[in-house]
Length: 174
Image (cartoon, rainbow, N blue to C red):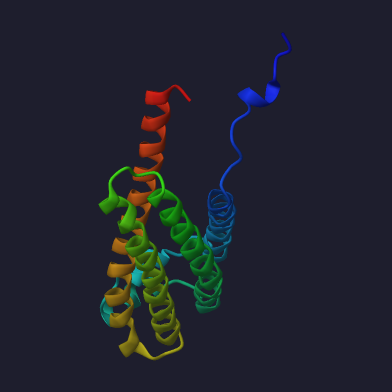
């Protein structure tokens, strides 16, 4: 009897999963570039400062050009993490058995897009602050909080999809 090697070959990776891997890897790379551009500047502290006084403390000893550079690089990161979270949520929705959890994937994907929009407004308000328009810094915090929450929801949903896939494969032996 001839052994058919194709019978033991794993099925091809779905296109949406391949796209998710692409966007996730590119988002991680863009995040690394943004972090490098910040040169140790605590950008999250500025995002969450909320007041001019706190923001002034955060930027006190920092070079404005470095802060601007980090924020500008963050715009690339936004595009890539939104693509990664959106495709990840759509893929994860295919892994759940529950119809409710499957349908939630579209809402989570829209939430990831909303997170990106919040992040764009947050970055614009931080740039305005760094450029001398101090009143805009409070808006950065207002935008940062839902951005972080929606991103966390998307990450947890994707991890739920991964868990559902692993459990299904453990149960079926494949």
